[in-house]
Image (cartoon, rainbow, N blue to C red; front, side, top):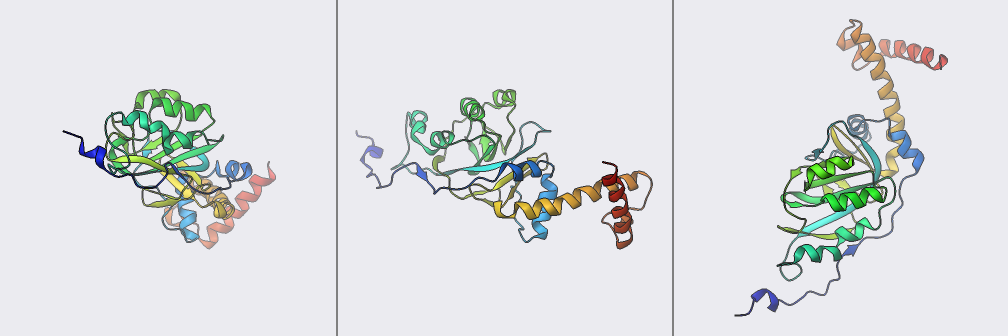
Length: 263
């Protein structure tokens, strides 16, 4: 009896799908964002009108790590039997977007993977993470699972995911479909070349065109929080120093001028 899957007609689509060319952010922008936490970046983006920048779900594989880098995107899609299914699929993966995107990695890239929070697709494993790191990749954000967690942890590469699984990437319901395309991760839109800021609070997507505005707003915020912590540790009232009042803002400006003069 023949296998009914072999009788399915094949759609006229060529995989993997690749999006258009994109420009990565400059090294200076990335360096300046190194001093900005994901919480501050998220708050400042909210004030600038971007209300969905937080990638909800992925947590750090190794707490205490941090990354700032240019988004390199990978999109998984639901499997359909006329395109990808059956035995030997792990070997078919080498001809998919998962392998293709890794050949485009540039130093400082953060691989951002759309996987719908799948609990059964191990989007990245040890060998692929090792190759990504060798190419200069800075970190990985997966709206889904990874496998080989201990080995990836030993590599030291920062990874944010929703958990782990023993499955390989296409073993369950998803298939690596496209790269260099817009992706939806944890309720946030990420475009190729956007900037990812990720730490223990989770990943945040900074639109590339808004990086300078975020940096400017964040620099003031981070500085006055240092001042406020100092005053609160000295016994000051919370309502006077967080956030600053007009009076304590003047006090902060004087404090800041003294610090700048001392440099």
